[in-house]
Image 1 (cartoon, rainbow, N blue to C red):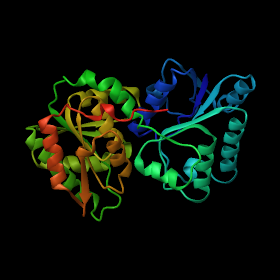
Image 2 (cartoon, rainbow, N blue to C red):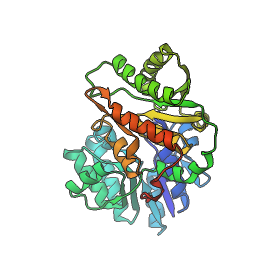
Image 3 (cartoon, rainbow, N blue to C red):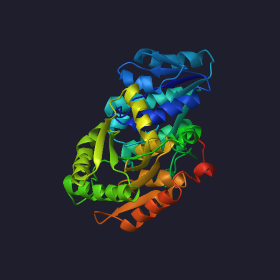
Image 4 (cartoon, rainbow, N blue to C red):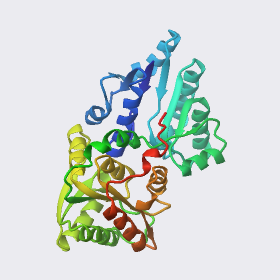
Length: 356
């Protein structure tokens, strides 16, 4: 099979690299992957590609699926995984949007397999909803990764869909057991500010820092890693760091800069991390892959995909809600006690693990 993948995404987000890397590894077992590399950051391509990937230009990417299919070859067109934010950034506007829809329809008509998997869907409305419903109807595989999205596609009568796991789970299953015996003497955190909060970022940072201090104290840990996995989070993470330093903790900084070197360096940091606290889904799951214990602190509405994916993986006991602009201290204590009792035990191995 010949598979065509266009990795346009949030390049500054390590999580997008992680799930794309895992998707390409899964697909590499099916055949040769033609990877659009023109105008894509080289560092991002270096992270996600494997030995079965061949880089091609935009023109070749547009034409080769048609040519190969007309030669009666087995061909698949792969959409990016992750959260579909909708809007013109996702689907285009005017003629561009029409061309995108027409191209998918032509691919489907000549027998190209359309694959879209590991996605969160919604909220969408109007022409953007119709565009996504069209993709679903034409798809060979349309994989939805959590409850919210499953209810959304069911409620909007999508023609084809199936339930899948988040693609980060693929490398968790493959790698986590390797790292459980590593010496762990640090805590890591990675947060973005809460958009729906009534508090300014400085006060939000104080609340988060207080929770991190609780975890550090109960684990007798003095070293904390300020990990920015998504570049837009750096200012908020530094506000949290300021509070931690003021309370006597030693903080070291780590930053994902869209290179394979920084991607691998963060993995090395997580091998030494005992607990990761975050409201970023793939900060939690990437650290978990390397044996760290995740604690998710978030707003159930704003961070819905984090909570729903963790529920999929049978990890609801590590979810801590933000309520009335404050951390739920009961849930935080429950998560800490769960971690202290058995930080390496995980009951999620029997969770659903279908990806495509």
